[in-house]
Every structure is written in C-alpha cells, then in structure tokens.
Image (cartoon, rainbow, N blue to C red):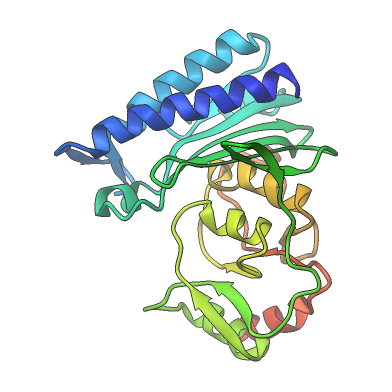
Length: 266
C-alpha cells in the first residue's frame, strides 16, 4: 500500500475520533451562508486532515469543504489536489443517526485516483486506489469489495423513503421492481460498492467533495458514477464546485439511459 493511502487512512480515523468526541456531547450548530449546518466536529476534522495532508504531501494542494475559497484562477492550474469533506452528512450528525462519513480523495487530471471513506459510528473504513481494487478494513485485515453484477430484481435504490423529487420518482417508475433504501452521506456509494445497493440517481446539487472519495471506491469495486451524458463524473474542470446530475451504478450495464429519459420528463 502506498504511503499516501496509508497516511489518508490514519488521518480519516483520527478525524473520525475527533468527530465522535463532539458527537457524544451537546454541541452547538451554526449555519453557513447557504444555510447548511456547521459544527465543532466539522472544524476539528478539517484541521486534523488538512494539517496531516500538508505534512504527508507538501506539494499537493488541499481543497476542503470548510476552506473552499480557493479562486478558480488558482485551481485551474492544479494537476493534482486533495479533495476533502471532513464531515459528510452534517445533517445526519445533528440528527444523531450515525449516517455520516469522513471523505478524503486524491484527484489527478480530473479523476479521483485514491479514496478513503470512514463512517465513525459503525467503524466502517473503505479505501481504494486506481487499478488496485476497493477494500473494507476489518480486524482481520482488508477484504475486497465488489458490486452486485449482474444486478437482479428488485433493484435496491438509494432514495428517500419519505419524499422523492419528481425526476427521481419518474426514474424509479421506469426501473420496474425496486426497494427504496434511505441512507445519508457517501454511505450510498459504499453500499453500492459492497453489493448491498444497486443504484443511486442524484438530481439536484451536490458538491465535488461529497462524491470524489466514494466514487473512487465504487469504481474500483466494479461500478460507475456517470453524468447524464454517460461520461464519468470528473473534478476541478470549472469554476463552480457543484456536480452536475449523475447516477451511481453497481452494474454499469443496467439500462439507466431509459430510466433517465423518463426522469427528464418527470
């Protein structure tokens, strides 16, 4: 295992422990300009990860959700960068449902080539590097994870159990027999990587740090994260840090274009 990946694994766990220390207490919740929540845990994890990555690879710039003010004039010069969400799923953290993660990715030429996702409450630690497979860390060592291929009915879809936007509802209507599974944060991608979920359609805003680490894990497990034009989701290609609409698949041979054609008119 490369020193970069080993270092990221250690940092994710260290950040996760700092998050759990806050999680166990009463904590204040602030709100950013976009009304999204912010807690002491987000900031503590951010500080640990950024300092650690700068020590691990001083020549690679770091872009974190909690310090995302780097102008495009600078970012567009980057060939590689770290992309970090110190606490993905702050709303889940505030609800105390355990469905939040620490995400650390290395992006090279627009593609995530290393990804670490750590869910502190269940203690789930997944990691991947381009060409080296996806792995779940256990007490007995790393275990390879692979998606469910071919997918079988009912398709297990990561989608809200209580509310669906019209486009997602239209897509589900074309999938046939489905089972809806509600999950927070990048856990959706991880469950697809493990073969426990099949599809995650996403219409609406997400940010690049929400997806990069888990995309690397899912792709190395045999799945795909595709824009609606069929190209892989990519990074640092434009001034905005928002992702386009996308679909994550455990089995890329699924007829997803047919589903999304319906969604386009939903």
